[in-house]
Length: 299
Image 1 (cartoon, rainbow, N blue to C red):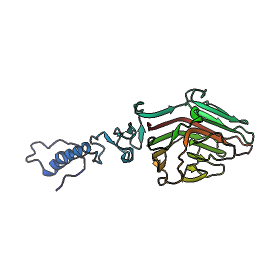
Image 2: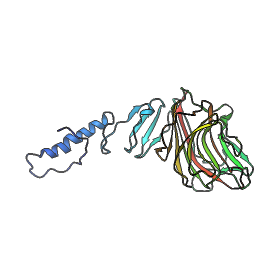
Image 3: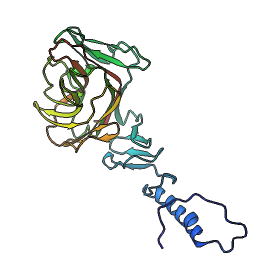
Image 4: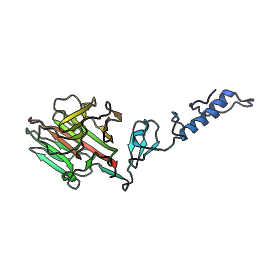
């Protein structure tokens, strides 16, 4: 009988048990040793009780999360990930090897890192709650908007090139009022008009009257979308994985949204941005972000 990938917690042998039953030996010695061997050799054990190898491979080969405390080093990103049991958390990488950006909006003034764009009654300010957030609001005047984008907007902060991928972007965002037009992610401009769409973008979007948030890839005004299935006013973790110049995936609260996207991928230089507008209607709309982070291969 072959060894099984099944862990059995050790138990006391019965007093004067001679000989020891083969079933106990198989479970507590042979199989448990096999679980340990599989975990250390290629992280091949399915048992959470086993010791798991700290894996290293390209990001495309990261295994499914599910073993708390396991680590994975992505050799093409020079970045390490921590398994929390449901998803892989991004750990701060060595900056000389990997591009890394993080902002948890602990401050009201975004001017050091971000350009603020406000039109009509739109505002960008710190949120008045117990978490650090940036709040983008339109106010009630028709055609109002608010946006922030990184200060490197004049040259573009990020481009999908062979020496810039893979890349991962993660956002913790809440829409405080449904309706309006909300966008965040990467775009070639964050200063588009109140009722217009960015020409090129890799982003999450919620349109006025739309049922859900969508992951969107746009190139030259043509787009491919993925539906998250969510339209509530709660905090959610949104992730964009740019695996290669021809492959992008959208993730929502740790689960992938639809199939990988391979069409309408912009080759333009893109910048991080958040944008909200009320679509030309006299309605107050708001969106709050708690943090944004990006990790990408260094050129």
